[in-house]
Amino acid sequence: MKTLYTAEALASGEGRDGTARTNDGKLDVTLSSPVELGGSGQGTNPEQLFAAGYAACFHSALRLVGRKEQADLTDSAVAAKVHLGQLDGAGFGLAAELEIALPALDLATAEALVAKAHQVCPYSNATRGNISVDIKILEFAA
Image (cartoon, rainbow, N blue to C red; front, side):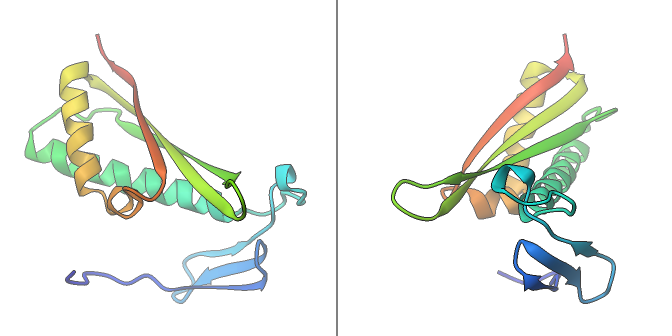
């Protein structure tokens, strides 16, 4: 892989109940475990950060392939859900869902663009074969 960009971040404190910041200071967050895991829920958590990153990255990939195909991406959007769960035996795992809105496109065109974006998106490439990623097109032109 030819590196095009490197992001750097540091997490400190008590892990899920600590802080995380990037080396350039553009992201500086207080972390806390969600209420569902016994935490205060007052800060953000790694799953929320992953969901935001995946949604933004996939939307960028979708817009890239859409421009190449000259597709109308008016009002397009990507929502991501990241699930944290207990694995059989020991440890924890993740699963993701992407919910995509392409209201200016018919379903067949939307499906084709989403499939291409899933091959381009770095998050999709990193998760492929490692975690379940369910992709749903929720909004499209009738």
